[in-house]
Amino acid sequence: MTSMKDRAVAALAIWLLSSPCLLAAVKPGELQVTYLGNEGFLVHSGSQTILLDALFGTGLPDYDRVPVTTVNDIETGKSPFTNINALLISHIHPDHFDLPSTVRFLRSHPATVVVAPGQVSEQIRKALAGDPRVLSRIHTAPLAEGSITAHDEGGVRIGSFPLRHGNLENAAYLVVLNGRTVLHIGDADLPMSNLSQFGLSRRDIDVAFVPFWQLTEDPQRVRTQIRAKVIISMHLIVNPTTDSSKGYMEHVGGRDGMLRQIRSAFPNAAVFSAPLETSSF
Image 1 (cartoon, helix red, strand yellow):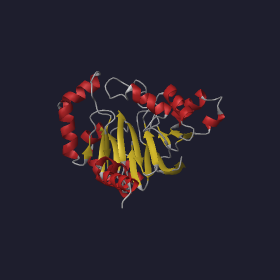
Image 2 (cartoon, one colour):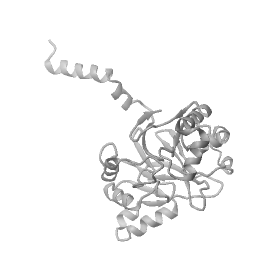
Image 3 (cartoon, one colour):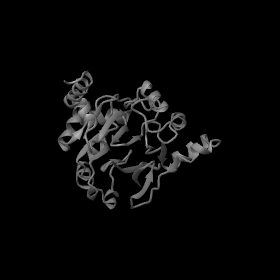
Image 4 (cartoon, one colour):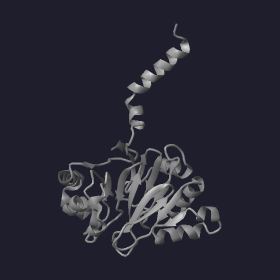
């Protein structure tokens, strides 16, 4: 006769197998992406998790901000912001990086490294000058002209390289998570005239995070020189307040026109409409 315990175990197994959410959560090789705001993302696959441009305080009014409660969860390490291997920062602008938030994050995540260009990492080091244990987890991204420099950070294989953004250091990152390859190019300026030298089209990129202006104004370069299976558009204008953002939105026909252009040029593009949306690829 089947015991009550056996029946309970069987019922649990049936429930697990029939639950699409749980199946999605454990699917081998899956790359799970959660949009946080602007160019900020949580990316997870297997046992590896990274944050990209995720801590930037109030940011700028034209773009999505990370909700305050989510910022607190990231800083303090509440689920799903646990066991983060690395926080990657592309550049020093206030819609990508906030010093106090990053310091709080480092102190709450004792196993996480922060990787950033020198302009950013030096600010963090100065703020934490009296805490050598935390200082050891602040790593400056190597940005060699004309090549991708590979380095291991927090157990994750990362390639970093520079893409022009005015007179600032702007780090692009090529990250391998559980065998899946992710590209984040920060605020790369138009045109990305030096992109071809990095050989990205041969890297078998699964997901590329690309700002909207590259997708609407220079789509051919993105298609031929990045060749990602999935493009995720980022830095989308949500509330035009400056003359430049107002002029751009008028040029493309508003937000709907911007999204139509992106999807026309990139049928494989994913567009997140609000912070905390999650998709799997």
